[in-house]
Each structure stands twice: as structure tokens, then as C-alpha cells.
Image 1 (cartoon, one colour):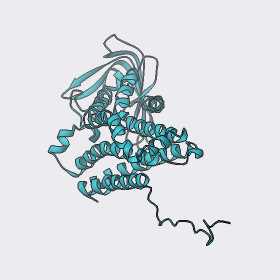
Image 2 (cartoon, helix red, strand yellow):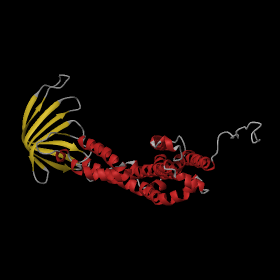
Image 3 (cartoon, one colour):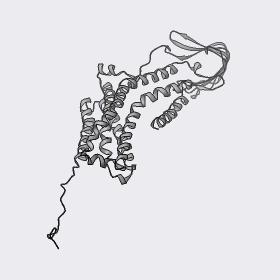
Image 4 (cartoon, helix red, strand yellow):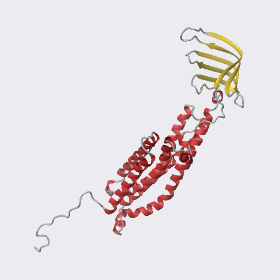
Length: 353
């Protein structure tokens, strides 16, 4: 159920990126697959948390815990079987957040960069208007060749930096690279330049046999820098700057968060069996959202130097672990905030009538 919800949300997001020209429409499913793999640690953490809370809550509701407590075992006695169940999932979460998370983000960045490095003429489909990467040009071609390097019946609307608009049409056009500069070479066409906004230049029409328009100034084979989320974990350890420490703290904290949620689920599952599971579900979702927001907020604090990595890890995750263990001990030993008093009996209690 959680995977279905995540896939639906990420699919809508990926379709939005494709609509804005950030992702190749033909690679939507590939981008979605990599994105889902990167989000799996979060999904597994929430699934583990919900599974433990719902299972133990059902045991309280069905009075199975009465048998457990009657045998002389407390709530902390569930810690060992729960950890035996959870440790393979915790190991998978740790491996995925340390290795699969940066790999999946790197693959997604490679797909985006490869699509962004394409020439403006290569981006458009025959019979469709397409805006350039700079947003100043609109291209249209009637048809193109099999290799995608040449188009027929080309139409270009261009807005210069001074606000002047020009319209160029040609019978054919092709992409050429000259000294790492990409040009669109047009053949047999005409160009209409409108009057400048300041009135210094009037409208004019010119015809040409060959005309070149600069499209890009970088080689498409050039490497583009990756995002911080795509940096491998060992690179973060080798270069401990603030930004890298913030990302490293998030990855380690995500694994620590899963452990804390196991302890929190064990402590939060005990409750009134007549109250139902709505309170446990609401508390589960609220705790997960609140904890993850603190984790993301702490990443920004570490990256900006507001707090160190070790104080943040101990302050957030260490304090949460301590509170969960204290709450579990309170439930196990049935501690109260105030000492309990035995009820007072009347003076003649126990005497024969």
C-alpha cells in the first residue's frame, strides 16, 4: 500500500518534470524506477514502524497481552523477538541509504543531464512547437531525417536581449559543432526582424541562402556536476566539508531513525484496547512526519555550520533513543508520575458483624 502511494506521487512529479522539459518523455519509467529505489529506505522505515504498532496493538485488543503479562513477562520482553524480526530490514535500510540512495540519484541526474545536453533541434518532435533551453527561442520543423541532425521546413521565433523579436524560416536546417560551439545552419530561407522597442531600428526582411544561429556554447560530451544527493558515501567521508557533512548526517541519521522507530513502536503500542487503533495510527503518522522534518532541518543546520555533526546526531537521535527506552521502561515496570496510594478501609473493616 505504501509503495503504491509513493509510486503514484512520484509518477505525478515525474510527469510534471517531463512536461517542463526536464526529463525525456521516453525515459519516464526509468526515472520513476530510480526515484522509487531512492525512496525505499523511507518507505521501509515507515512500513516497519506501522507493522510493529499494528501487530502489538492487535495483541492488546484481543487480550493476548494478558496471557503474556500473566506469565511474568513485561512489555520489554518483546524487545528481543521484535529485534530478531526487524534486524534484516534495518540492515537493508542502512545499505540502501548509504549506497543505493546516491547511486539512484546519480542515475537520475545522468538521465536529466543527458537530456539537457541535447541540442535544441534534437529536442523537438516533427509537427510540434518546442521552446529552447534558454526560453528565448521557439522551434518548429515539419519533418526531420532519421539521424535527427537535419530538419525540413524550419521555423524559428527568437527574442533578442534588447526585446527585439525576429522570425526566421528556411527550407532545411542542420546542427553543426564548430570549436565546441553548436550552430543551427539554415538553407534557403528568409528572416523578418521587427522594429526595436527604442525606435533606433526599423523592421526589415532579408533572404539568405545560408544562415547560422548559435544554439549552445558547450560540448554535449562535457561532464556536468552532480547534485549533493548523488555523491557516494565514501566521497563524503573523504571530503568532510559542511555540505558533505550535512548529507552524511542525513544518511547515517536515516539508518538510526529506523532503529529509534522500532523502540518507539514497541513503547507506543501499549494502550487501552477499547480505544481502537485510530489513536495509534494518528500518532504513528505524526511521529514519522515530525521526526523526518527534524532530520531534514538538521541537515541544513549542519550544512550551514549552525551545529556540528556529532552534537546534532547525539542531540536528536541520541535523545530520541533515550526517551524511547525511558518510555519503554515506564511501560514495562508500570511506573507512574506520582506514587500510588492504597485505598483506605473503614475502621470496622474485617470485624464480624
